[in-house]
Amino acid sequence: MPDRSAAVSLSVIDRLAEALGPRVTVDPVVLDAARRDKSGHVATGRPLAVVHAESIDDVQHVMRIASDTGTPVVTQGAMSGLAGGGTAGEGEIALSLARMTRILEVSVPDQLAVVEPGILNAALNEQLAEHDLWWAPDPASRAISSVGGNIATGAGGLLCAKYGVTRDAVLGLDVVLADGRLIRMGHRSVKGVTGLDVTSLMIGSEGTLGVIVGATLKLRRVTPGDNCTVTALFPTVRAAAVGSAAVTAAGIQPAIMELMDAACLAAAHRLLALGDPVAGAAQLTIQTDGAASAAEADAIAAVLRALGAEVELTRDRARGEELLRIRRAMHPAMEMIGRTLIEDVSVPRSQMAAMFDEIATIEREHGVAIPTVAHAGDGNLHPNFIIEGDGDEVPDRVWAAADDLFRAAVRLGGTLTGEHGVGVLKSRWLADELGDDQWRLQRDIKAAFDPHNLLNPGKVFAPVV
Image 1 (tube, rainbow, N blue to C red):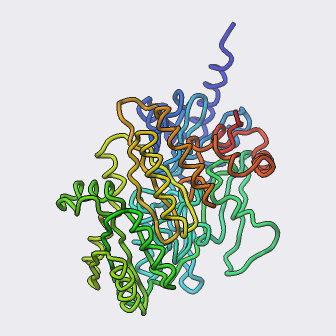
Image 2 (image 1 turned 90 degrees about the vertical axis):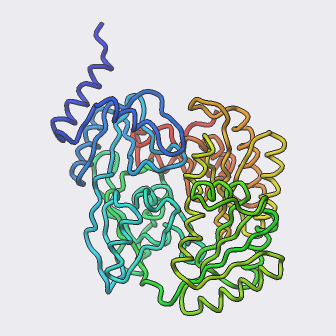
Image 3 (image 1 turned 135 degrees about the horizontal axis):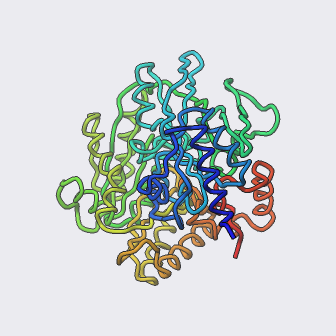
C-alpha cells in the first residue's frame, strides 16, 4: 500500500511552496536548526518545512493550509527561548517570524508603537531613542530576543521591579488563529475594559492559542536625569539576598537590582577577562534613575554598608554600563562552563534568602552545581544546573534536583516560571502548581482557540502522565 502520511506531507509542502515560493525551505540544515532553541532541548525528528513569513498574509496562508491538512504549526522567532517552547519536530511546520521586523508606527503623543513580532528588543529601543521614547521590558538577552517572543513567553528582565513586565507594556495584539482568521485585540487608548481581556490571555500563551503577527506597545518617555550604579560585595549569597530585601524594606525602588552568586560572578569575570573577583563573594548590582537617582543611590549604599558589604557607587554612566555588562554576560559565561539547564523560578521578595538556602541544600543532596543569578528586585531567580558529560538529554539526577527546586519555590509562595515560560521542559509540573480544576480550565481555553490542537502541540498543556 502507498504511504498515505508521506503523500499528505508532500501535499503540504507542495501547497506551501505554491503559496509562498522561496519563503519555504526543506534544506536539512535549516530544518535541523528549527529543532532546538537556547534551552538545549532538541525536538524529535525534523519538521516538514520552515516557512520564513514576511507578512500577515504569509502567516494566514500557512495557517489555512495547516488547518485544511491537519498539520501542526510551531511559531518561531529569534530562537532564544529557554524552555523548549519554540522547537519544531516530526510532522510539524516551523513558522518563523524572524523576518517580520518593521516598526509600522510610532505615535509620540500617544506614547505607543505598532511593531511586527520579529524585531529585536535592542533594535526597537535604538530606533525609539530618536523619539525620546523606550519600551521598558529589558531582558538580559535583549540583543538577541524578539518582541514577539517576549510577548509569547511573558518575558521580564532587569527593569521589571520598577517598570513592570511585558504584560504591563502591551496595549493590543494582532493574532492569526489556527484556522487563518486575523483577530485584532486590545486597544490604543490608555484605558480599555470592553469584554474579556483576551490580549492578556494571549501574553504568555507560548504559541498555543494563536500566532502573534503585530503588537501595539505602551512606551515611556526616556527617564530624565543621570543613572547611578551601586555594586555591593557580600561574603555569601544569602547575605546578598538579605541585602536586597533590606533595600526594598527601606522603601527605595531602584530601576535595576541584580544578584550574582559567587560561581556566576567568577564565570562572568573570566569571560570578560576582568580578573578574579573576591573568592566566594556574591554581588548585588543596583542602578537608580530619574531626578532622585543620586539621593536614592546614596541611601542604598548606606543600607548595604550597614550590613557589612563592600560598596562601590558611581555616577558615571559609562562605568555603570561596565558594571551591568558583568550581569548581562552571565548566560554566555555559563556556556563556557559547559552544558547547562537554565531554569527560572520566582518567589516573594521576602523569601529570596530562604530560596537560596533551598538551592544550597539541593546542591548538596543531589551533587549538582547550581550557579544562580537573580532579578533581586522582583524575586525572580535563574538557577543554572551544570550538566556533566555529552549528549542532548538532561540526566535524571539533574531533573530530580530541578524537581526539588520547583517544589521549593512553590512551597515558599512562588511559581515555576517568572519569565521563561513552561514550554516542554516544565509542562510536567504545570498541573501541580495550578491544581486540577485550573489546569483543566486552561486546557479548555486552549481547545476553544485551537479545537484541533494544531498550534504548538505537546507544549505547555501536555497531558499529565
